[in-house]
Image (cartoon, rainbow, N blue to C red):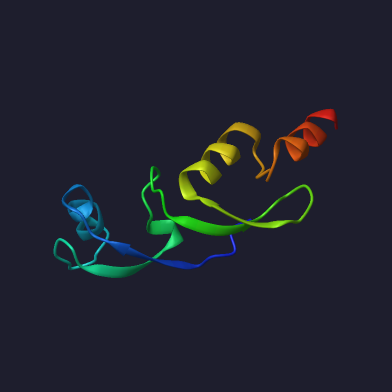
Length: 88
């Protein structure tokens, strides 16, 4: 479960059109506060999330969080929690 609601992003040339398409009227090198839902799927921004197995709160990269959700349908904070889920 994601606990972070917003993150600050510096707009680069490769993300300018992405954020402008979402309704932000911005320029390159501008810092903006965006909702987690508006981050690109490959974003390296760190977010706080809670492990779905043990409840540990951990800071992880958004892209890695999405990979865990897509692969296991849950967020597991460690290989130990992943193994526990697989045993069930």
